[in-house]
Amino acid sequence: MKKLILASICSCFFLISNAQEEKMALSLDEAINFAIENSYNTKASKNDIKSATEKVWETTTIGLPQINGAIDYQNNLKQQVSLLPAEITGGPAGTFTPVIFGTKQNIGASITLKQLLFDGSYLVGLQASRTYLKISKQANEKTELLTREAVINAYGNVLVSENSISILEKNLKIIKKNLSDVKKIYENGLNEQEDIEQLEITLGNLNSQLNSVKRMKGIAYKMLNLSIGNPIETELTLTDTLDSLVKNNISLDIVSEEFSISNHVDFKIAENDRESKRLLLKLEKSKALPTLSAFVNYGTQGYSETFSFLKNEQEWFKSSLLGVSLNIPIFSSLGRSSKTKQATIALENADIKLKETKQRLSLMAEKARNDYQLSIENYSTTKKNVGLAERIENKQRIKFFEGLSSSFDLLQAQNQLYSQQQNYIQSMLDVIAKKATLENALNIPIK
Image 1: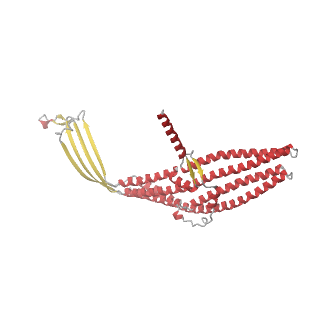
Image 2: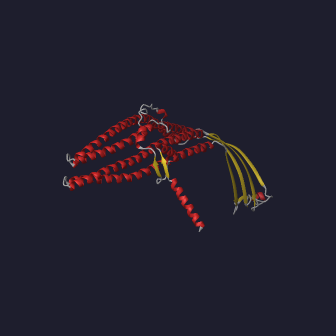
């Protein structure tokens, strides 16, 4: 019984510990830093760097000494017969005597050291592998920048859903009170049934919107977990607010920041892609050069009619060999020429792509600056419009209950207010998102 109680306590402690591990409080900066280390994309890109590093070493080892060993055992179940002129053994001329050369069984062991002395393609391949490593590191940098932008958008979407819920609940509270007051007025015969129905339509629409946003909030949290590399069911608490993020992300200094295309990661990737195509062309040309290698071999052979190779009296015959091999390409039916032409075309395309990248990155930076400035202006406008819409809706509500305006006028004012509220929240998210896009366009490193 004691063991059962102890096991139950341990199980409860384990479950509580797991539950605690599945909760996390994060600011936006903390979420970004966590994602850089733990997101699925950044983990994969870091593994690509490791793989590229191993590729460099794999290529390097081609030019290093190679040692191979071999053991061969043969059992001639039916030995081959050779024919010798019979007169050698004293037989009649013109006839042959069947003889068997060698023993029924033999075994041999050898070890060979090979060393590449010269191979043009090896030298080019080594350069190419190092270029590939550079591309992998730059791809990881690009992945981290994209991860930052994705986390900012996901974090912002969660805050937008939470703010939308708060606004909708506030609007619902007001509408419910209005509907209750209108019903009391109707019972006293001072208004029409249509006034109640108009408010009920608005109430139904707000309830539908609230339910939809609540469902979207759950998805938004899961998307944030996915973007930072968490299990999607992890319970998150966001310590930053939408207002604080907007305040921190409104800065016109970044608009005037100088754009350096030579330091942009996309441009570096395009440059290294061009370099890889240049090396490919060099590789195809190097295949017309001779290759030179040397080898040293040492071996031993044993022969016997029976399997006596493990006995001390077994006789062994040693051998050794030193050699140099020169391979000279002479004629490939223009195959090498065709591959060289293809590599030349690939290099030309890489040059074209590099020019296009310069133009595209400059245009993206300019567009990102304009979009960011527009988002700040739009935020200021929508913030002002919300205040105006609130005052208009409040005046129409007062007029309605005083009998000076219709329920239709009140409905229009309410719909205008709800629309401006959503525009305001969206404009806040746009400021944050457009700032992230501009940071990527200018290739501003992660702090």
